[in-house]
Image 1 (cartoon, rainbow over the protein chains, first blue to last red):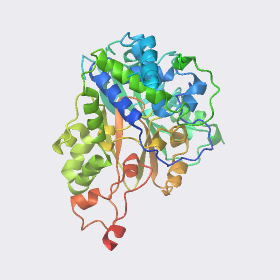
Image 2: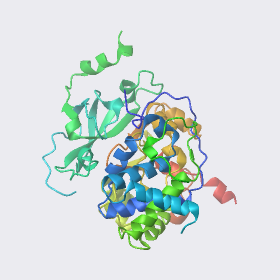
Image 3: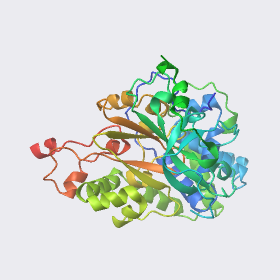
Image 4: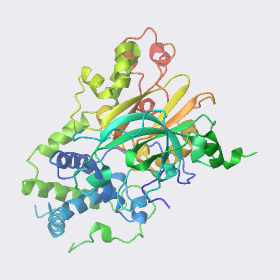
Amino acid sequence: MPKVHDRGGWPTGEAIDMNDHPPMDWEIRLNAIRQVLGQKGLLSSDELRRGIEAIAPGRYETLGYFERWAESIESLLIEKGVLAADEIDRKMADFEGGNV
Amino acid sequence: MPGPAATPRFQPGDRVRVLSLNVRGHHRTPWYIQGKTGVVERLHGPYLNPESLAYGASGLPPQPLYLVRFNQSELWEDYSGPRSDKLLADVFEHWLEPASDAPAKVSTQDERSSP
Amino acid sequence: MSSHDHPHDHGSGHPGVSQDVEPGLHALRVKAIEALLVEKGVCAPGEIQRAVDAAESRSPADGAKAVARAWVDPDFKARLLLDAKAALAELGYEAAASLPDVVVAENTGKAHHLVVCTLCSCYPTWLLGRPPDWYKSLAYRSRAVSDPRGVMREFGLELDDDVEVRVLDSAADIRYLVLPMRPRGSDGLDEAALAKLVTRDSMIGVSNPLSPEPALAG
């Protein structure tokens, strides 16, 4: 049985939805973060894909494309010791609480 | 591409079968071509191995990468298009083995064409 | 908010939508990651913005320029099909060594190419810009390989049975760009006018270039 990302030929009656959502700022910035980290040798496309493929199958199917990227990149940065999980949490809380 | 590469084992026109390797981790060979026979369409050249790169390793030694052509009717039981339709996919050399030229081998895979 | 789950610890009880399952959460996460990367000196201030600007400067007009040149210059077309990166450099598209290699697949009266990436969403972004949502959708990734004619029909492209459909699953390091057929009735157009007929979708292969008639009628 193929893994959830190995999508070719999966039975689906779904039509192709040709509506394109306008890119959100965070998606554009995440794409750029990935490129910069790649240029620095800190995160390759192959690692990004491995991180995406590690997302639980049910979650993989419900997340948007860049949401998968965000989760993969966060996990990889933590795995590599570039960032710590708790400092990301703290920074998010700071932004959310308006403490910055 | 960096690093020395082995001499490619296959050339355009060669018949090849895609292996069903039990790779648990990251790899780039789609499930639906595994075990299928095709023809080398193009040799792209040596590329770093994604199965190693995905874990932060060097990807060395580079692996020859091929574009392999398959008959759609041999990939999908219920393929509705003409029998001439093709599918082409990039496959690394360590996922390929030589396949016989004998056409009988191909037709036995396609049960619908049995008389 | 005191704390939140680590992303991979979430359960699977999410609604079956494909965008924004947790509105704002991923945006906040990315904002935090960017701020920390700069604070810790991993990225220099402005570095990420420069990458944003570089990515945003790319669009299907880049690929269209190459297609139009190939239509008017057979020698360029031959070079483009043989070694796309080198030929594209002639047009001013210098590809960094780190960028994926590009292979151009030529459509003819006998063969029509369609590009997909079933494993993720590989796309020639430095020639086409940002991929459309549908290219990244699970429906396209599953159906483009097993039902390409059905998919193209949804895009309004019906091909005769004597045209061989050739689906390219860009599963590894190569990004594919389709060189569509030059439309009938475009003989009198110059390169710039031809480039305007070359749509993003025609370079993915789900449709053909625009026909010149509406442009001339205006």
